[in-house]
Length: 289
Image 1 (tube, rainbow, N blue to C red):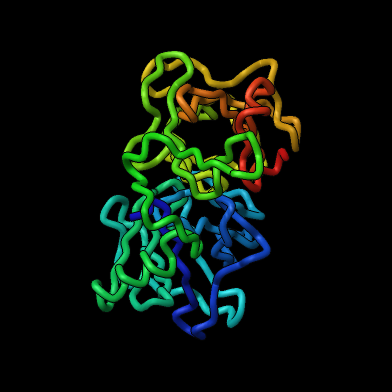
Image 2: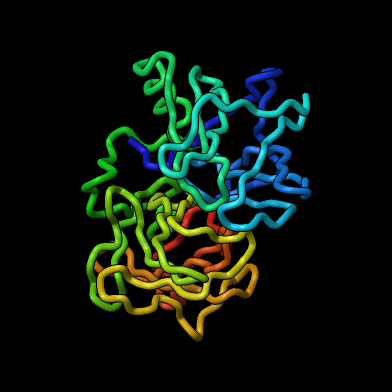
């Protein structure tokens, strides 16, 4: 159904939630713990989006170094039941509040993880009904995969409105090829290393995940089309909220493609339209308006 599954976990020892709603990673509540590596100790916040490797940490951990994780409530060491199949490091367990476990590798840089449910059918039903996407409900008659025209008319205004939850059909402004893959808005990211950034294609849904680590509140070096490899960053356009460079994609509205801008700073929710389209198109609940 939806591609961004938010998992909610708790400590296997005391049963208290490890979710930190004050510290967000990937624009979602994070999984907060105490981390220790060598003689360093501090707090770490992991992304709660399953499959995302984003995190924030108070200490710097060397690549390939092992880490121990502790519950911030009872201070107990989080248990391990088996070793990583990729690097042989201990896998750290968390309990899912819906029943079951999720395990992550304790070696920094290893992306191996696993999830298991006590009752798979019950877990999937609860995932899609309760955790599918932050409880957001979409119109029942909207085909999220094939809807060619997401524009909804507001009878009290001459402008067209793109409503919150609208599936944005996104294209590269250079080669005009679709940027949607597996119902995600996919972009090529260039930072310290190259990878892919997957954004939610639903308007005003700010969940994201990437194949490379992007520090929170940091501006990425470049965003490109994964077809033609041309940059999407506009040199003359900046974020209306934080001033960071903005990237441009094209979205389908009315009978034409219009320019749609997103901020290149991790965690910033700003997005907007080209000034020429402001009289014809409006975005519901956009932070620019």
